[in-house]
Length: 367
Image (tube, rainbow, N blue to C red; front, side, top):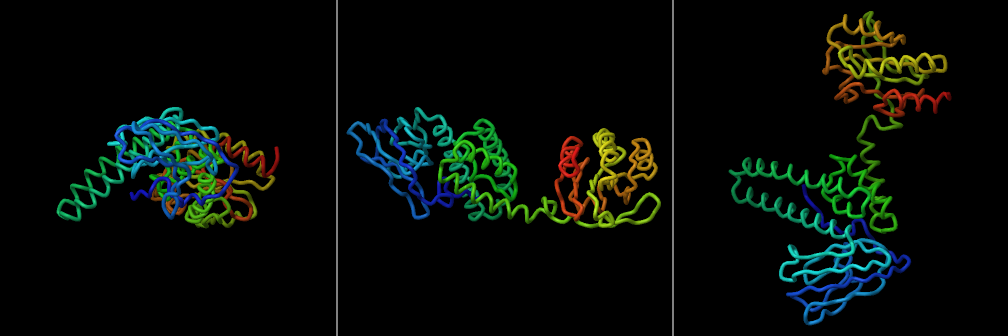
């Protein structure tokens, strides 16, 4: 994993909004410099917003207007303390200038304190990754040993990241977690964090830009997802109980529930009665079910169809268990797995249980 700088303006282009008054004060003893600044990271480097001189004993007070409620940093020399500044913020910071990485206390902004501490963890993890890369470069024979060690450390970091996300739900501090998430590998978590940040800190230009960027990422992810809503359902041909073949496209013109199940699947069997009721309710209006069984034995498959009264005529299986050809086409990793398909053959939704299916069918056919 390669971490980018946390508050970098990939997500932010400075825009002057309504002015926001803030106060940041405190004391930095042992400071290596005599001035402190409120800065905002941009693609061209730090943009100084406000600043002041410190007294001989390290006291300082910055009072003024910032362009908008957003993410900023208090910069002391080359060290940054990351802050969330909203209207009328009055934050106090105390620290040891000889080692602000270890000794910095943020008062009156719990969100800033938690975000700053997590960013420090991210920076340490990034440095650890870099060190591991250098160790391998220096001695390639240690590659396997280093990678094994890094895999163990990655699990620890991932646990800390997930704990941070869980403990800071609906907090602007969650922005600290976003840089360590690869949307292509964990899009659900990425989407959840973006949505939470938009709700709790939507006035931030950085979050507005993040939301805009997210829309593009979502489109890219959906383009890779063959089962995304609106996409054509992949067609297939499979064998019915009597040995004849049928295709999914044979049902075009009807709303189809493609239902992956098996006689040995308890949750599938528990869903069946509700699906039967919905089939009987809407079958005359153009709804049907195509069941794809992941059974291995034909007698078990047919016995379950009869026992559960699966009255629709569309049942297929190659009796290859998890090696089902159709299952592979649809990426089925667990069952029950369902795909609701419209009359034109396009996907409406996936992974619907009976309650969700009932609501979708009500939207289409009415009560």
